[in-house]
Length: 295
Image (cartoon, rainbow, N blue to C red; front, side):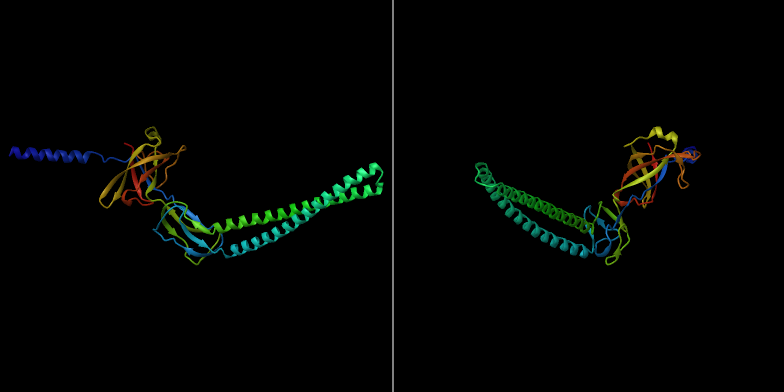
């Protein structure tokens, strides 16, 4: 009889000991943040192509939407035609300049000859004055041609700048995905009219989520940047433990959010921290609560 009672007493003692032992409380609590990027339209127009669906994974730089660019292409054609016209004007101006420069060369030769004749008494003062006047007038004409040429070139530069501006507007009609991730929310459909700044969809890399938790002042001495911590979340197979890395520690205290508890609930002021956690097997979800253990 004694041999039977001893094991029973031992088991009863262990059970009472476990019942009296307080359940270990996590060092901090938090929720996984929504770090989604909101992708918006940069130009107004009709969505002629749209390749975005909720839950779809997109690579960085992928072309996901095209806004109607018809008007921009038409404007570009007008500008290109204007440049061709200006190029023709520039050619005519250059031709006139060449003719005047040839005339000036001949006038300078005659000017030199008449000056010599005037010194020798073989030419009159009027002949010398006339040739000097012709040289001066021709030089002035060449200067005027240079002014016309600069005006034509300035006009061309203006059109070139407008073409660059139009090309930029066309490029902004091509919406490229800014980050690799999964589409969380889609706001529009193909064929709809969009305006600049209108959100098209939100996207986030869900392979790694950020847990925002809160710790008390006394716990600050136990944490540091890049520190590894233990994260616990509820899963289908019970509580699952993951490893996270502290990436940010707030420098200012704040009042405890109502939905957050800490190890020392009596304290009103807490410090926020952020922990990067690899989303193993995709079990983590945005907004999911989690426990954090420092040791």
